[in-house]
Structure formats: structure tokens, C-alpha cells
Length: 102
Image (cartoon, rainbow, N blue to C red):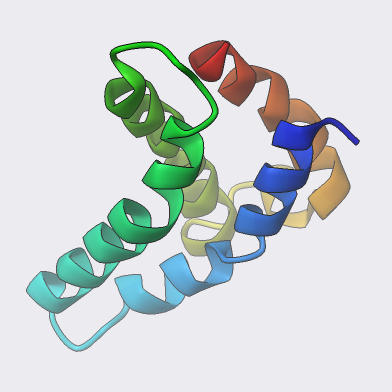
């Protein structure tokens, strides 16, 4: 498995937490929780994958891809994404994320 695939595989496992916090007690609370989850946990991991001077921008764009995937899969339950296997999603999303960090 490619290093970035392993990294994405690990972090995609946290995506159900995104749908849980979207339905938190308030929108402001949910937004704060989502922001801290992605800013503290995912963005530094993605930014560290590239030596480019705009690493944080690249990481933010990669996170946008992952957040969109999580929202469609876990919150909106859009098919066929909602029932696709974890491995299928990792295989298809990894090349997109790799474009940001190459």
C-alpha cells in the first residue's frame, strides 16, 4: 500500500465522527468541533506530505475533498457512495489527494 493510501485509510476511519458532530446540540458547536477535528488532526498530516510552500492550502483543498466525501457518504447517504466499501473509496480518493501533495 502506498504511504499516502495508508495515511488516508487511517484518517478515513474517523469520518463517521464527522456525521456524529454535524448533528451536535448546536450548529456553532458542531462547526467548532468539525473545525478543530480537521485543523488539529488531518491538515498537519496532509501538509507534511509535500514540501511545497503552499502546503497548508494544498492540505485544505485535500480536506475539502475528504469532507465532501464524508458528507455525501455519512450524512446525506448518497448512493452508491453510501454503500461503497471502505477499500473502494480509498482506492478512488487516494489519487485525487495525491495530486494535491505531489
